[in-house]
Each structure stands twice: as structure tokens, then as C-alpha cells.
Amino acid sequence: MKRVIGLALIGILALTVMATPLETSADARDAGRLPAPTPAQSRPILVDHTSIALFDHIPDRYIRAARELRMIYFDKSVGANIDSGLDCLQYPSASAAPIGCKRPDPVTGQSTGLVANLKYDRSRWRYQWWPERGCSAWYELVSCFIAQAGPVAAQYDVLSFQFSYGEVGAGSTIASKSAGFFANNKAVNDIYDYEAFAARYPGRQFILWTTSLSRGVGTAESTDFNNQMRAYARANNRILFDVADIEARDPAGRPCFDNRDGARYCEPNNPTKCENFPDDKLDYPAICPNYTTEMNAGHLNSMGKVRLAKAFWVLMAQVAGWTP
Image (cartoon, rainbow, N blue to C red; front, side, top):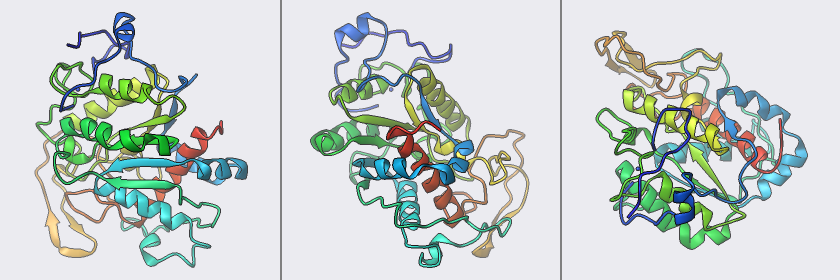
């Protein structure tokens, strides 16, 4: 049975997920802290919208080091979009890349800024869709990650998974202080179990992610959870890919909010498909319309997937040892 333990998270939380929980080590519980995976980072690695500009400054030495890392991440459909964006970058040139890598920003008409080069070879980086059964709700995904990653962990240097915008919709318990991902629950796997699992694999790096967002999600739940994840990563010197921050800032760095704003919006590819949700007077960070052509969902267009792919290279270069 797990005991509730205090966690230093800049005074906000106590951090949950489902199936038979792993046992957190007694020493770690008694010390009032989580077990650290691999050699603990001396500082957090946080990649967000401000990091994208670093892509053009990654030294070739760290591009080579990053592409040699064996990496796997588990995700839903937005993860597939990011995977596609990584493919876009590894073409011999931007002109050789398919149109799906180069469609302009639907809001401004701005180019995606695709910089393709064979040096961005990501052949050792693998995206893996979740199994079809038992890996749907947020509280199932840590269990699924442990079950799926465990048998292959020895084959990879870097492992991770992401919660999607489907897990942070209105009514989700993911950010609950008593029953969410960052709570130490008895019945389900949570951050404690994730860390205990990671600690089994010294020498491996485990990346945390904020969630993807959609035009409709922006919610209180997504905002709270993503803030909790950022605070946790900072307080515990973890590696964080802040997808939510990247998606919720337009190319100029301006914040974007959910579509419950009283403004009519029609999908660029289908101008007869429109929404005009009443203004609820609340502004929750949501994916910018620059990065998706959907009026309520959040799958990435060319601009979105190229920006996320560039940020991922910045992340992996830092995992490989680069300090910008």
C-alpha cells in the first residue's frame, strides 16, 4: 500500500493512473521524495515556444549526437503529426519535401519555415501508437506505458509518452489534487509509479510532456494539469517537452485561447464548416488556428507539425549534451 507523501512542487500540488500500481521504493517514500530516474539532471531541460528559434543554431556535433540516440515515444494522433513533421525535416531539401510539409499558415499565409536536410535523420526515433484496448482514458496511459515500454526499454536511450487533449477535456480528473496524475493513489498508477519505473533503467532518459491542445480544449483541466507538469519538471530537474506552450503561442509569440469566444470561425479547407460558440468570458490556452485547420479539434497542419518537429530536435540535442 502506498503512503501519501509530500512532494516539493513550488507549493501547488500533490501529484495519479490505472491498473495495478507499482510499489514506490520504501527508501524514497521515507525520504519524502520520488525516486530519481537515471543520473538526476543537475538542471531541468525545458523546451517551449521560445526554444524554436534555437533550431537553426544547433551545432552539427549535437545534431549528430542526437540522431544517434535511440528514442521511442507513445502517443495518439497528434504524436503521429509530430512524427510526420520529423520526417519533413529529413528530406534532402525543402523543395524535395511533399506539399504536406509546406502548406502556409492558414491565418497569415506565412511560410512554414521548413528547413530540410539529410542531416536531420530521425531513423532511430520511433513513434508508437497506443494499443487499441485499455489505453484510452488518462488513468490508463501510465499503466500502458509501463506495460509497453518495459519489454523494449533496453533497446532505447530515451523513452516517453504524452497525454493528448482528449485526456484533459472538461470534467477530467487528471489535475485533481486528490485523484489526479500528481496524486499518490492506491488504485491506479501515477507519477510515483512512473518515476519508480524509470528508476529501473539507469542510463535511460525519460521525457515528460505537456498535453496537446485543441481549439475546444483549452479547459480549466488542461491549464491546471500543464501548469502542474511544468512546476514538477522545474522542481525535480526533469526533461520537459512543453507541447502545450508551443501550440498555444502563434508564430509571433502571442497567446491563443479556446474557441468559446463569440467569434465566428470557418475551417480554411471547408468554409461551410463553421463555429460561433458563445463567449464564456474565460480564456484558456488552446492551439492557435495557425497550427490546425480544424474548428474544434487540434490535429496539426504543416505549420504546426514543422514547428513541433523543430522544437523536438532542440530537445533531443539538449538530451545529447548541448547547452544552448
